[in-house]
Image (tube, rainbow, N blue to C red):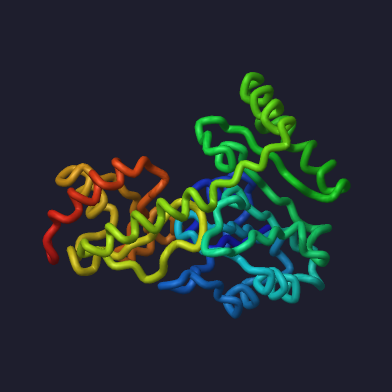
Length: 274
């Protein structure tokens, strides 16, 4: 069995596929905007393909799938039995007026998708490992048979707390709040040697190039940045099975404004071609 994974990808996808004795088929998104290589996906689909994992908004790049992307995917798999595993945990974090479009909203994909969400992300309480899945009834029955013996249960207090919050019927919207942080972060980062190819369309991550600073491999550069300037980032190569290195790192701007300010003061000290 094979599962298509779009890279860079959240680092638990590939190990989970391999633990099921399946083979991950990794397809790189097209830099610098991390758009989908539809021709590569089309070529990868065969009789062994059981599923494709889609993450939108995307970690680590912030890229977002529009309805048109889901339409294209549907056209590629409509005559197959391929499932769609949609990791949509950043569904409340889209910027610049964009609206999240879920795989479950797509009429053609609804009966073959599992959409995964996280209260930890949507309520900005990431230490609370509490989420939920949306799927058609028949698919959910299959899902529950496995889920029962994988995680069994989660912390009761967190379940009670989230349930009480949901009873208030309050819409917890973070998009405007996080967009303000993103814009503040990008304005400050523009004064440093880092380069931005595209401002993050969603999530709370921003990918930046350090080409003008160093030719170090990204993992070494991230360590160097932490040790010498006290600013922690994540290199993008670990998000690829092949460890592909394009001198890109991921910043997280879900921080207090003063923390971002302090980080920028440190990054401003970095000379080009360090």
